[in-house]
Amino acid sequence: MTISPAQRWALAPGEVHVREAGDGFTPAVLVHGLGGSALNWIPLMERLGGQVASLAIDLPGFGMSPPPRDGDYSPRGHARAVAAAIEEWRRRRDFAGPVHVMGNSMGGAVSLQLAAHRPDLVSSLTLISPALPSVRVGRGNAHLPVVAIPGVGESLVRRYAAVPVEQRVQATLDACTTDPLRIPHELREALVQETAQRDALPYATDAFLRSLRGLLATYADRGSRRPWRLARQVHRPVLAIYGEDDILVDPRGAARAAREFPDAEVTLLADCGHVAQMEHPGLVADLWSARFAPEGVDAGSRVRP
View: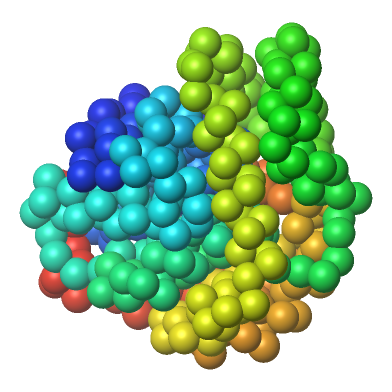
């Protein structure tokens, strides 16, 4: 497995770190979930490399990206950073037109905001266990509302940071996958190294907690910009992938995704947890190709080598 080096891009919302991979002409931008980073997409980037040019982003405050300049950690705030990264990528690689967007967990919520507010940038959405509002509480996320409480969350996260890095990475993989042994050794080592680096960053806890609070705020939104209402306004083809063994996002959300998005293909994967793109990258690549590759890519959406 080849882990592409990170690049630092200076954008209007702030500096972001990104990873590029693939020699295909079809552009796709990949958005990780809460507590994750661009590393979460490495297995899928490798599988799609022959047909897709991928850009995986460390959202502001995550991975090695510093906090956003405006301090907005809401899904819509993160979506503005993704939009700026897409525009910068188009400038650097000299192509025009929209890109395919893939989002996992919180990254799915961010991708929905991007598609709703900047449809000119998005040709399709692939949502992997998207963190969208649900009345059901999963056995793996029941603690998150408690963690989001100001003061309580800071104390809990500081206490958890005292656990050895290897144990924390293993605990995350245990929670997010059906079989953690499916995660390649090289990627596991990279996750451990990145987690250790983040331990030294003074803003890491703040970025996690404020992003969590921003995400949960969308769950309570009853206004015109609530996520499922935005979903009904997304007139782009959608591929939604859920894992039957997901303990963080209720897989029964697949039925609602099929109802709410105007043009959605929804798949429920057996023997799969929260991060299908890491646990079953080949299957996700096949599903993506079957849904989107036959459409072809017009000249305005071709990435130049």
